[in-house]
Image (cartoon, rainbow, N blue to C red; front, side, top):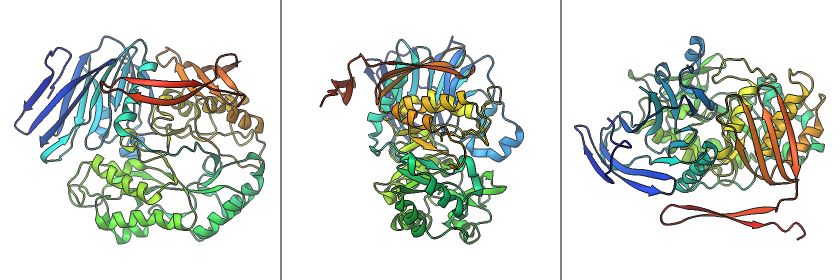
Length: 556
């Protein structure tokens, strides 16, 4: 049911329906307005806002961190997802995958060249947009939840300005102030095993790369999917040593030990599944519900509202921490949000927040990297976020445009989600692949991907067999490009060409022109401008945001 459109003049509303009551008001801000309110009853899915759209190009965003974030042409775009992919991917495609069979969907926010429409958080409902009948329509889906008392709805924000890039940066600031995320000041540099070894990593490979890693000055050394007994059984398999030996060996080289795991996922072959089916999300018939298919197995979802499952989840991380692991890449997190029957009657988003809170409390001050994660619900729980699809040692510009391993799609997201970095978390652009063998990359792709990642001040993790031929100069040059305040232009360009400008990098002010389609770039350096440090952002009582800078004294 639509409750608000730009045709209304009133400031305050109370909507009474058969199944719910909604109260809300409009707060004017310099760039537009914020709609806030509260709801009780059994609302299901409500239509909160709509506006006619004359533009043919919109900027859309997928619901979880692997998904695309890009401009599309309304009259041409369709979800080109093969049926076999749909069957296996299931809820990785969308929390409500059936939505993708209809109109264009954008989750959390959507933009035009001079507008951004968005939600500021996601704690109870799933907020999303649909292009429908020449309109942008904003929805909140509360699923089957019944609220006896009023609960706060996800605030909606409407921003209008000269260009979408600036509006997305403003949107990110408002989201930051709404959620007050606390994340690590450490923006990591390190090594990860996945994009060379995949599931074939051995302990011997680990020892070999540790020994070869000395010249790279890594901060973290992370083993990816390969070390565990099974998905859901988060203990080392027989061919790997115990946690403490893994951690102590990595520490010998001066690195923080890191491990990958998928804490909300449970394989059909795991002891967890065999012994604790009552800890899993159920379907309508009370049977464990498949969240996705991977590793040639059905993967089920942990019910994060079950008291025993909660204790188990907490102990997984406490056990690792107590044995010296202090960097956690947590993957396939969307599994925590699949619709289904749980121990408690909560929305899937509430269940996800419960699970993530347990993980955050158990990991303490250690670094948590999210992956395959719902975007807005993860703010405040992770220190870093993989904001792209999987990279791969190939770059294909004419491939299918959906969640798929491809360095081209990964790099596109690195640019289009730039505005999240340093505000919600540290962006993980996915690993740099710097090898010149066992890869289809040419030198231009290696350099372009690496330099974009550095200039945007992202996390930097390399994923190569270090015994191969490595472009070490590109690695160190990428690190020099970090540390600045980046801005991007070109998100709505007809082609995928962008301009990135970063102030106060480790080597001064830098501008980069990038053409993803032509696989071309150039860097311009200019150190004559004043060097600035960004001190604070302040929000006035009327919601205006002020950014304060001071000139950097390079002689101090």
